[in-house]
Image 1 (cartoon, rainbow, N blue to C red):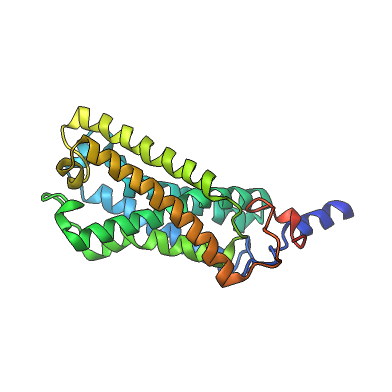
Image 2: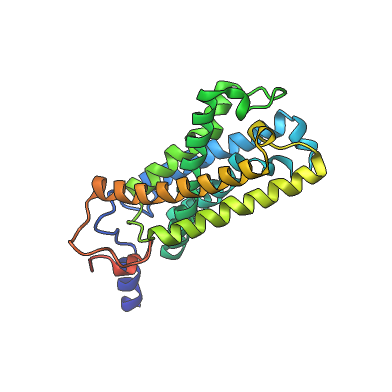
Length: 249
């Protein structure tokens, strides 16, 4: 029993570069609860304010925004469970999911707000009405809270640029195949920009998105080091969430 207690305590020690203790039933649980509340509100808004997408093939999952929101919800739900149960295994799963969800939400924010500044009609159909609070909840809050989780409540990422590019390319072209399937049933694309681009243009857009997401992964990894330090001259070698290796930098 004593050995099991010592082992459990060692697993719950935070990574030396992690700024705030997590999993925990304090600040970490509060961040994950507030983030989940915003995500749930966004899904509630979609349910209570139906539009063309509600009756279409693929529902709102045609939108990259909603796919990202779903992944963020899963990430924070597991994070909150880790906080409540103080589970090192759930903490590890949350951190692994974050490697995908955080760069994806950053990509969504960059693409959405960037294109909206150029021309709102590129990302918002004529029939869609999005009030400011919903717009922020869908396209800003997820990336903000995931960045808080990364910089304050997580160990450093160890993913390199090539695996990051492979992951982002899989997501980008998987999404491309998915919306083309939805288009074959619905006869319209979720984002007006897809209507305006020829086939080759859509391929280029998804390829560019994959590169931007991979670069955001690398940038977030670099920013983490700038914010929290690097700990040693050697590169970190433990997996994200591998808190059993704490202190062995």
